Length: 142
Image 1 (cartoon, helix red, strand yellow):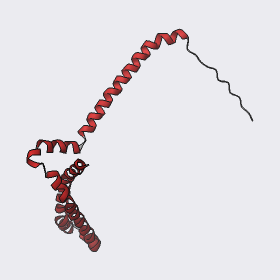
Image 2 (spheres, rainbow, N blue to C red; image 1 turned 180 degrees about the vertical axis):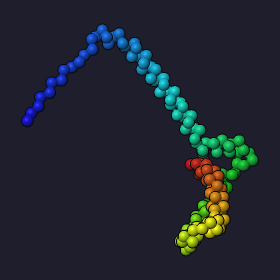
Image 3 (tube, helix red, strand yellow; image 1 turned 135 degrees about the vertical axis):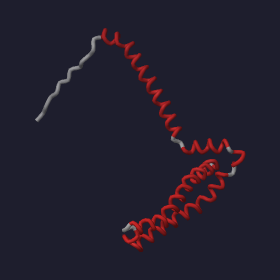
Image 4 (cartoon, rainbow, N blue to C red; image 1 turned 120 degrees about the vertical axis):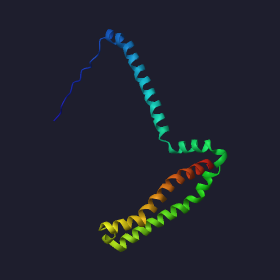
C-alpha cells in the first residue's frame, strides 16, 4: 500500500505582507517590552523570597555590634542540630516503646505533648533562626 500526498504551498499575496510588516514589527516590540517587564517582576519576586539576602541586610545594619554573630552561629549549629535529633530519637523510642498507649487517650496525649511538644517546637524555632546565620558565615568564607 502506497499513499501519495500532495501539499500545495499557500503564499500570501505580496502586497499583504508588506502592508502588515509595520504592524508585525510593532506587535513584536510590544511582546518584547512585556517580556522585559515580566522579567523585572520575576527578579523582584525572587529577591523578596531570598531569606539569605534579608539576613545579610539585617546583619549589615548591625555589623558594628554583631559582626561575629554568623561565625558564632556556625560554631553552635552542630550542637543544636544534635540536640534536636536526640530529642526526635528519644520521641521515636518513646512512641515505639509505649505504642498507642502514649497517645490513645486525652490524658496520655496531653502528657506526651507536655513532654516533647514544647521542646521540639522551641528547638525547631531556634534552628530556623540560627541556621540561616550559619549559612551566611559559610557563604562569606567561600
